[in-house]
Picture: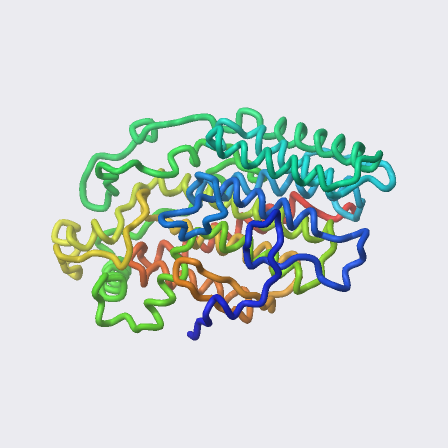
Length: 442
């Protein structure tokens, strides 16, 4: 697998001076249907949700605080608001998410979309977790954006539409579990022992997600999988041997290309995917409503996939390879071999192993793209700031396979957890597509 230098990716910087590689408006796009407000506020939402990361690795322009699991849910909520605002202004053949509005003719899409996005983000405080300084960045960007729009009736109408959309989306999400702060003990952990994940002394992540109401699914457990492999099974022994050989920090079995593949997917995947989705919308010349619908379908699917994934993680509490491989002498399987010195290629995220969250999320977004475009043959580029490279995918199956292999190669997951994660993501996205963002004729 060849991965090109990130500097080779052609892009137009957009969105409030954030300096990203996502593209802006296609030069042939009709001005009235320009997707620019959606692009701008999709980027601003990402900046307000995704952290900069250690040393700014995820992007120094980001000022949020959410790890990928929770970030996906927040991105889903705000992109549902952006979608409803775009639909209200431009109309279209699709059903709204939270509120059906018809804006006065000539209403400013920029005012409507920016207000819907900003007010939704602010309305998710304090659970969004922005400090006063961080919220001041968000508020300042919104004020500057509005100031650039002519002060006329179109702007006033747009602000009013955005306000109504944000209020409706926040009402739909009222008391959805974002404000809860459960402890590990609240999630009924099983007794310690072989096969059971141990959080150690570091803070565990994702504790809110199992109790969070999904954006489209009926419940967090709706697509819960059957559970991890039995420790005494042949498949478990094969999976353990695979990750032990390929995911080891000093592996001699992992090739240089596989190491690059593993590191590529250690970026914050909401930053990674959002930039990729915006570039894809540009390449396929989507207008305002279609860009908003693409992003909403993808991010709501991704958010619900994360809720479903963490419901399963904290239902099964399965141990990570860095615990399983040194502890293999106690797993009851004669075909596994303990290695007390084993460590993964990168530090493992602190939550249970099964199923793979990245597989859940990536497959959900990929399946949403399959539904949107009506084909698997969707070519697009993703970049990684963690590895400083980019990769051009020929179709959607390729990206799913890539990320699933990468989670074994980095030492985070057993192969079965990636397969089951992809099943969750696919089922979630299909459910979302059947129930949200549909054609009015259905």
